[in-house]
Image (cartoon, rainbow, N blue to C red; front, side, top):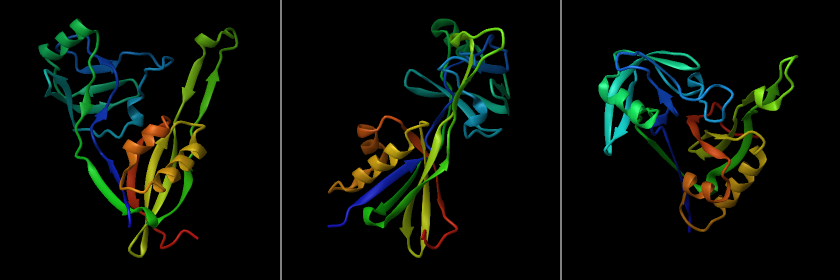
Length: 214
């Protein structure tokens, strides 16, 4: 019996933990500073000017503004966020905004897998000032890596780019190959998260410009 593997991506993009200082403040900023682990660099997210921002309130999607400009530590809003959003900051200390996206689904026979590669190597380093050698005061940078998984589709090869934590590239590929050997239909994110917590998610699925890998 032939089994399939399903990939899904393009769901909501979460902007992390954010704040606005007033109901008429059109600058939304990070709750964390750039040296803290909870910090999100907005320029690294797949965001576009004009997209709508939402928060969840009483299990409902609440729209409050569009994106007018994107910087590393701030998002410029197209309009005032309003009293509901600012009240959430006052009561909880922050908001957790997101952009809603339509998810995409792709499915391939497991037997059509034809290899993997490292597309982008992440970085992990710290920078100290000359006068202050204390680790907690240094600037710490960590970016994720991207691996590519290849599947035959007709006469072409399609590429699935998967974001993983830096340093876990080889183990992520090995664990992915393990789930392909499961004798059942597989949902990629559901199965890979059971055995490898360093897999972040799918970045993109594109038709490769290659008709074969080797």
